[in-house]
Length: 163
Image 1: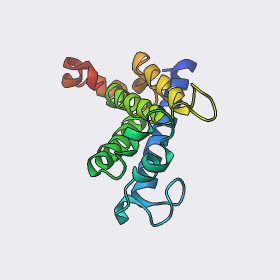
Image 2 (image 1 turned 120 degrees about the vertical axis):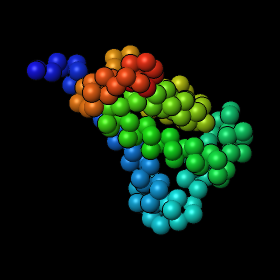
Image 3 (image 1 turned 90 degrees about the vertical axis):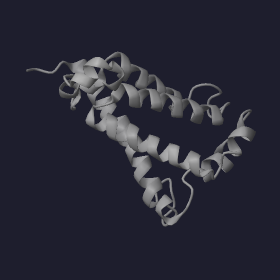
Image 4 (image 1 turned 180 degrees about the vertical axis):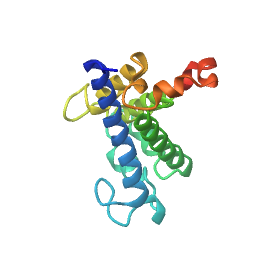
């Protein structure tokens, strides 16, 4: 069976964005020295959201967003979100559900920086958000992943949001 070019592109985009989310999870969990300093991972007791929320959030919504810095519930939700979205997109299962979760996280991150210093409206968070909308519309889990197999599950057939 020959794969169409657009299917290949959607599959590669899904895998790429999945890796971005999963890598962020790993870096924040272990403090690998990329966006999270060495030894400053969540496993060492450092909040994965504190730095961004307290010092990175700028703009008109920064005060309420900064008040969430260091909140354990926010940390757990953020880390579980990064893990779920990353693994889901990499495997091609639960792509719709994880894309909706990703849209929410990305929108909140965009909102925390609004207006952006580089561009008053468009930044990478909105571009990734638009890609996630494409994953939903074009069933991107079906390409280069387990999505077609997953779609045949009776539970997924009954509840398409699980696709």
